[in-house]
Image (cartoon, rainbow, N blue to C red):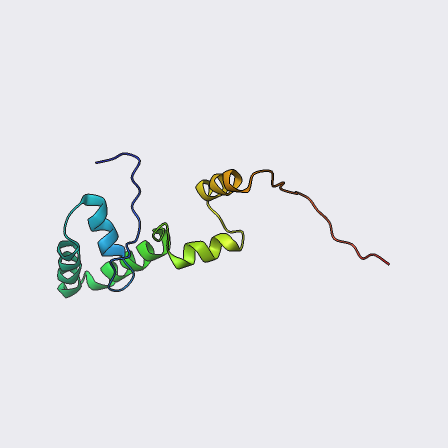
Length: 106
């Protein structure tokens, strides 16, 4: 396994892409992970735990690199460090202004 590879949600999704993202990370068929998840949902006392883990994974796993929402967040300034370095390289001589205060001009 590549040490620099990150686990991400996949574009090959049925619900949120968590199972497919895990399968892509381990380089196996997504239906194996989906099948294991369905089996966990059939076990009576594990159903709630399986659903909670899935919801947590949806919240913490980043989406695909080129998804609409990652591009949407990047356009409003919510970028990750890797996105910032890419934008600095692409923008050339763009300056970042910190501690700017707004005031009215009369």
